[in-house]
Image (cartoon, rainbow, N blue to C red):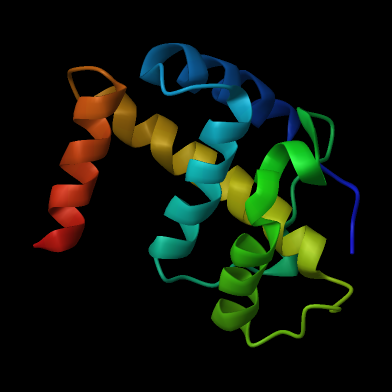
Length: 127
């Protein structure tokens, strides 16, 4: 298991920006959204493409709250990993970085507030 996750240096600014613009809660909420949004794209990230770890640092408890088992289970199912896999933390980090980039890019194209943006994304996912 791991104790902390650090985003890339570039994504440190993204998470601050998205937290302010989306107004959905603290930075860890945006990081959780980024992780799950990246996983929802149903793509596999390559461990060889890992970015730097000089950005925002989250402790396990702050990042996942009481739901760490669920977030990790989603990753394990997605990659067919065991919960004790040594690379699990790297997958978490990579999907947070990927999700932050995706959310930032898509939010720049949208109008409205954070709730409107999420509702739009949910509607797209349901259709």
